[in-house]
Amino acid sequence: MADMTSEARVVVLDRLWPGDVAGDLLDVVFGWTDFTRLRRLVAGQCAAAGLTGSRLDDFVLAVHEIAANAIVHAGAGAGGRLILQRAANGLRCLVADHALQGAEDPAAPGCWVPRARDGSERCEPADADTGRGLWLAARLTDELSITSGPESTIVSLYIRFE
Image (cartoon, one colour):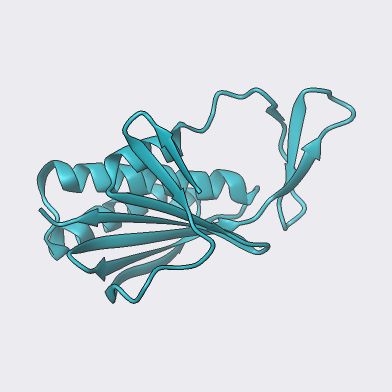
């Protein structure tokens, strides 16, 4: 399934990618307390791999947005896992979180209560102005794919070296 939003493409896959990975550059588990350090690690590894200029800045921002989503959607006290890989003619970053189960809170109509696997809850307005992180990440990278399953959601970002 593909969704076009302006010039951005979001492609949702039901399988992982072909064997285009040449090696892991970074593999870390993270939470809110690691967030600033994570961005520096990603920027350093991407630069060392040869990504430069605005492509570097764009990719690091896209990864930051997706990592923030992983933390927000994983529930209180949870986080995500980030794997940065050298791929065919570029870099691929995989960010995984834990799947949520949720429902509208019957005690507070219009309030969505996500339930993370750890049982934590938080209330967000059902019409909350969210969702721009995926759109932005799709605009800043050459490919964005989402693989979702019962245990986690994995977002893959790919950018070519130019």
